[in-house]
Length: 265
Image (cartoon, rainbow, N blue to C red; front, side):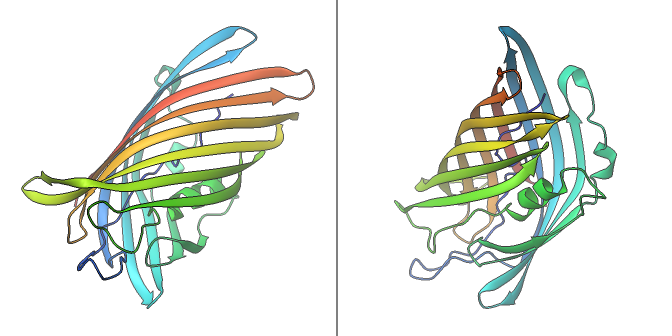
């Protein structure tokens, strides 16, 4: 059994102009390509038997933003390529169908998703989850970025995953920790701390089960005063318990995931 956290497999931010401090923040129209590399180490424990797990992935994603109106942006996220090494180096089945997957969304200038659409469940497994992740690549950002600024974003998401209906409540705290220089460019350093609580129920392979868990993430992203996104790193600790209702068997899953995002062009 493989249980994934609510962390988005995809953690991306698109550049946005934050000009004068008194002016509002808005994601900028434009197109950028990003490389996402991630690694995960974890373990699954059942009836005292512990099994170690390890996986890694390498993805290229293109994000395009266009202005539709004063308060609405059109977002298009395209998965250009993906490589995944699962447990024991195995490649997950159906991976060859993912490159070229495209999700479109209507979002607010600060990243709130109004609506999204993408592949159907008939064309791709877990299409609903994929649409959610790819439409939420841009975090919700406060109206201004300034030294010492901080804000909190709380969101509840519901979706299907592996036969379970899962609700996730995510509380993310952001803070402008200062400035730095990256590649000769001055940049703001913005930290992100997120706590996710998960609950769910459903059935896998005809077995009714329930799920509960938490995750704690710590990340840092870098943006220039002009709004260019320069990079992102994140580490997340996940703890999940799955109860198989018929026999009362409990499955415990722990994971540590590290993600790095780099702008390619």
